[in-house]
Length: 508
Image (cartoon, rainbow, N blue to C red; front, top):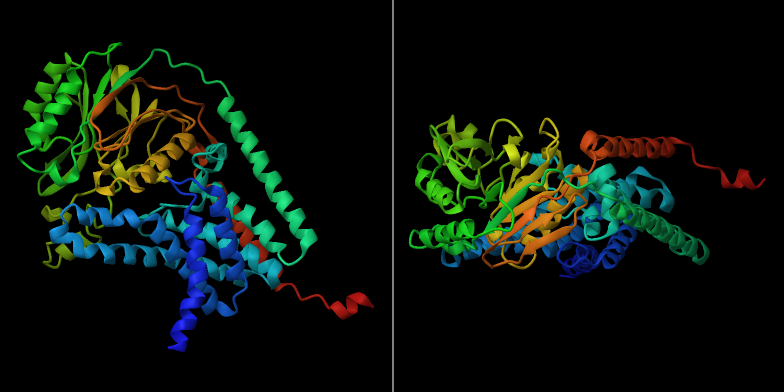
């Protein structure tokens, strides 16, 4: 019992610090509290004795952090609580403790350096590397990175140069400076002053970029984003299909101040497969007067099914198609499901029609007067590297999504925040059409110009905001940040191999 109490006490402080670190994420945006939380974590982990204690403290901090950020993960199980509600506690527990393993490994970065002056930078570097690893390992899940606490501030403009990993490096660097100086009042004041000056400089640079001019788009592209508010519990109810379709058709038929180049319906908004959606497309075309329509639906190819975005021209002919490339594991497919199918276990195999299959090629959609569009379906907007997979330069980004799965508290706002970061990284405006919200128009600097709130139906008419010149991050992605992190590891490793200074000889 005493041992259990000791473990609980040892875990409580880092777990609470992890919760504090989560406060900077959307929708709260309390970045100062988040910096404090990260500071406590660095201090607590760097002060641990031995790798086991470091790992445990990092893991405990991560568990508190991801439980606070990802609590909304229970929402999908509450769509049908009688059937799935019992899974909810296990879902959030496994998510929090599993993601926390990255932080546990990150805490081992303290071993890269000697003494306090080496352990603190080692832990900070470990946490940045953990964010990088979470972006790629096992198809990646870069949700709630340390750098995301800046999305609603001018600091986020740094992402145009180095993406989210550069923002994470800034976050941990700001925290490491004062933690290094803890215990000595003079150096602590200096360290806090240096950190404040660094943040003020980056903030000012971000403000300057936000204030910079953007050339207007010529000719203008006018788009209508339709939000039907088909709640997830009713979305696939056959008795409600016509209700939601009527909403979207009525919204498509509404008059507009300027001639429209495109009308957009959100992810899986049509409850028919592509080859059976003709009557709905024709009804929408007739209602809108022949405006091209981009619509989220599903399609089949043999025994495989795809989550798709289809674009129809003014005559109802298919003019563009994007199959979702980056699927959500367990939500849209079961990892290794096709491999199991080869051994006769077909229940999880996408090739047998169980779950979605990933699309084959990342291609821009040429929508004529509406320009060249980079298409994203829901979860794809979480991955900056996926946007760089498209060849050529788009005029704008279109994301269709169904955030009804995410509830109404934090999940939809965190998803929206990451879409804003994609716009900054690419220097491209992003139009976001969500089933239940938040539908939004985001300019090339990540600012939300127009939005429809959650759980409302309606539409937004907008002129697509102009693009910025191609950014450094759009050209290079995470390669520079990765090289910088590897260089830091090399420097710390070389420093660790240097012989310790003989203090007695130094004084003679």
